[in-house]
Length: 88
Length: 410
Image (cartoon, rainbow over all chains, first blue to last red; front, side, top):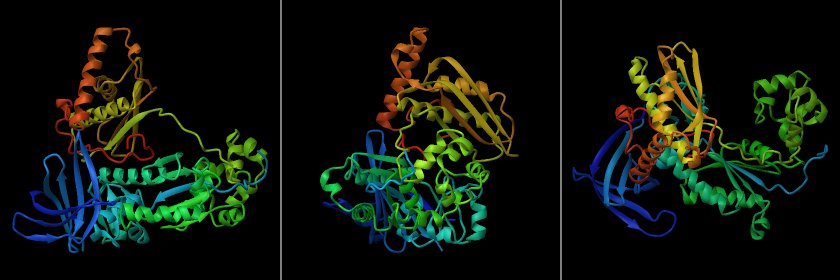
């Protein structure tokens, strides 16, 4: 079975807002424990409309684990909602 | 139509995302790439696999197989719960790309669509279709992600384009023309032909047709009068020769949902709560299509694989969740015990218009106003912001999953 940990952890994120097909790219985030994670690849960004509000899901990796960062475009907050690293 | 092949320029392109949901998950989660993964609607061992990655397919894992059987074949198989929002996003990205080439785009399901270039703009028509195909493949990688792959088929009609898209998987691009049609069909079995399942195979076998090439060589009279006993025989004759017979839109005839119960020991009241949830979901979808219904059909499958069903037709059209549930609940009183799966659909659909509520005005108008208000709230604040208190505990089980075979709700 796939070992995923579902979380709802507020995180600090450094993201680049640019142009092109992926205009927002998280590049690093800091967890509440103080651990910093360097994003090596943005897997996919997809929106999830929640009524009139839109949440943006960023599936990213640091090369060792996959993470899901959730950006609330109304409150401008980031949450880490999933971590998965035990695939073997 | 005559016995000739269609020699016009191939301008129908069928695009099929390879193992779509598994590929999208591998795109989103790089650590899953190159590994055998299975997409399930629920991560339990008795759930059926809805998509398997190519790595899993190589180990013998097949779509529809139970997860517990699949891990016997492939012990390292990783189960991933389906994420419809993700697949919907990719569907819309693919649709946007396709629409840039022609206004005549038809999505056949969440992971495949057809571009008809016949009426495309002149600069597009001047280009080689194969170049456009490779460009679309590259755009999927650039605009969605590097792991995205698709199969593309190009031909003179939808049927042959889909057949071509089914070849050279994964990441293939195949063109079928009269020049290579016989060679292509020669490599296939009758059951590989889209639209030929066991029943049609039996019909064809009864007149000595055992291969797609023999099917191609059959004369139209045999197909029409003996094999299919209708105009369907002529359609097959033309379809195999590259003439278009499938460019038709079908109107929505019913709206429904089913649910495989999460446990085998649910008591009747708990099953009914889930039925109520399905009714709310079906009502919302139906009203979203501006339809009302006159018929309700409920069914159930028992743990010992028995099938039970019941239906009723109402003299007046209805669309509210309350009425759908009341009718379904009444039918469900006679449902058997020990259920494994339940389902409901509304049929005899008609446009949702106000002049239908001329009788019993007060009651129906009030019900309609309440339903409209609830729909408006749910649209603004999200699905199931307002719903029956009876279904408060069902949301974590009866989640919205992938609408296979239809793109109406995407």
